[in-house]
Length: 298
Image (cartoon, rainbow, N blue to C red; front, top):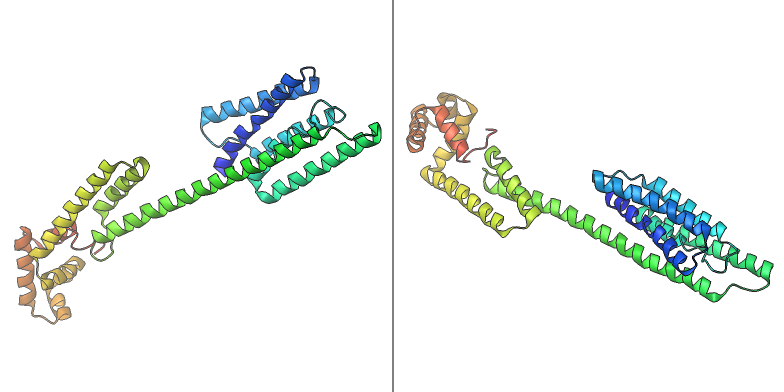
């Protein structure tokens, strides 16, 4: 919706352009001149605010309401004119309706436009006893068809952009979860690498720089290699014992849980400390977490 609101600003700029084009063909049109001046100030001020703040500062409903007012003023003022297409601004308004509110509002706008055309032609027939030149009608039809194509294209591009943004978020999250799982002990989070991984993935997606991809790959290879090397140091029983050591259970309770003697448990713990080059049980647990052999929550 934010993109749609910004897009309405640029669509509104078509109104003074249409007025300027009409004045080139028919210079002596005071109402067209007035609409040109007011619409130029209006849309120019909004463009200036948007470019200056770079934020969603557009009240698009109020903006479209003003454009409807411009279109109706233009229509009423040129109702009896044979030189100016009275509905020249209406295609811009219905294009805005399509971009902001969708096809239902667009069709309502087209229906209103057709009704206004019928009213105009009927009035001309009654008052002058002849129909307007068909060129007037063809201008309205061509402008409406062009507006339909333009608005539909913009709506499709917006939807495509939204789909790409959604896929990008899902891709980043999937990559993050995959890499976290690869660097954890069976799916737990790894506090040290999670932020690093997310930051690098974000930078890759933002810049699409292959060098960043190589850096990430090298970093992951280093982490995985470090963890695999640490895992190879320990036996399966020692890796199992690490999880119990991290819980803070005493050696006797660990021995009872694993159906081992307390001496065997102490021997395994001593072997772990020797391989990790540490001297206490707490240091062994800290080493295991640093090597991603156990999660930080254990």
